[in-house]
Length: 347
Image (tube, rainbow, N blue to C red; front, side, top):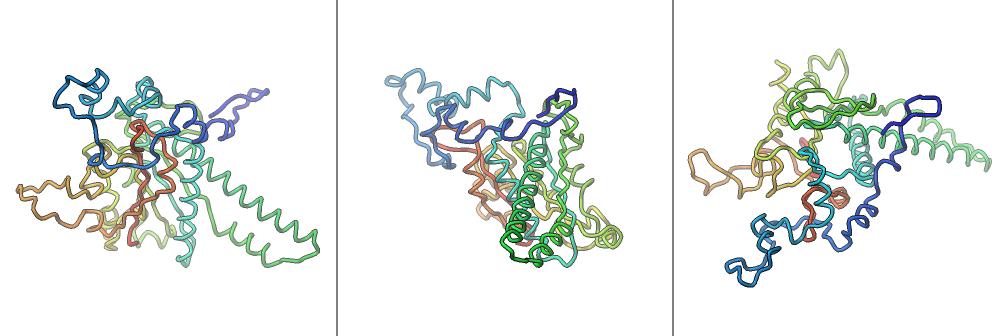
C-alpha cells in the first residue's frame, strides 16, 4: 500500500487504487452468473456417480474432489496458484468500506447508551498478514474525514444563505470531542507463515488468539475507575477448522481480571468472517451452534443442549448486506461460501 514520492518519502496509495471494486472482480473472473448467496451443502445436487459409464472425466474428478471442479472457475484457479495457505478472502473496496461503516455505526450505537465516553479496541485475531486491519483503519479515516467535510460544507452553505445555525456547529464540535476513533490491532501467532509486509503502516503483534484477548481485554470494574471505560470488538477471518476460539471471546471478565465478578463476557461483540455452519471455519457446533455437528461426551446425541454462544449470553446476527459483498477462495457458481456473522453480548 506504500510507494515513494518524488522526494523519496513513503506515501500511501489511495485505497480505491489498491482495492478492486466488487463489480470489477466479477467481470474479470467471469462470475456474472455465479450465486451471490450461500447455498447449504445439503441442497447441492450433482450427477449420479454410481455408474461412471456416462460420466465425463471432468464429472468424475468433480465428484472425487467433493464438488470443487464443475462449478469452479478462474477465481478458484487464482487462489490455488497463489499457493498461500492463509489466503481465503479477496478483500475488495465495497466490502472493506461496508465493514468499516458497520463498525463505526455499532460504536456510535453502543456509545449512545453510555453516560461517559468509552474507548473501543477492534482486535483482529489470526490476522495473518494484517491487511484487514490496515484497510479498515484507512477506510474508517476516510469515512470520518468525508463526514466531517460534508458537515462543514453544510454549515458554510447555511452561512452563505444568510442562515445562522449555531446549534449545528455546536453539535459538530461536541461530536468531534466525544467520538474518538477506535484503536485497531492485528494479531497472529505466525503458525500459517503469512508473509509480513515491510510497510510501517502494517503491524502484526505476534500473539495467539487467546493471548491477544487476554492482553487487550477491557479492565475489570475496579480498574475502570482509574483508566475509564473501554470495550473490545474482535474480528476473526477464516478461523482454522475444527477449533473454537470463540469460547475465549465469551469468557467472563472475572476469569481475566480477578476479582471482577461482573459475569459479563470479555468481548462486547465478535465478528466471524468465512464459512459457517457446515464449512471449514471453526467448529460447526461449538462456534456456530449447528446441532448436526454436536458430539456428546457419552455418545448420547439425542438431546442437543443450548448452543454455547446462547448459553453465554450472546446473540447471532447475520450481516447479509456485507456477506453479499464477499469474494472467497471456495466460492463457486452455485454458492457463495463466505459470510460475515456478528455475535453480540447481551443483545
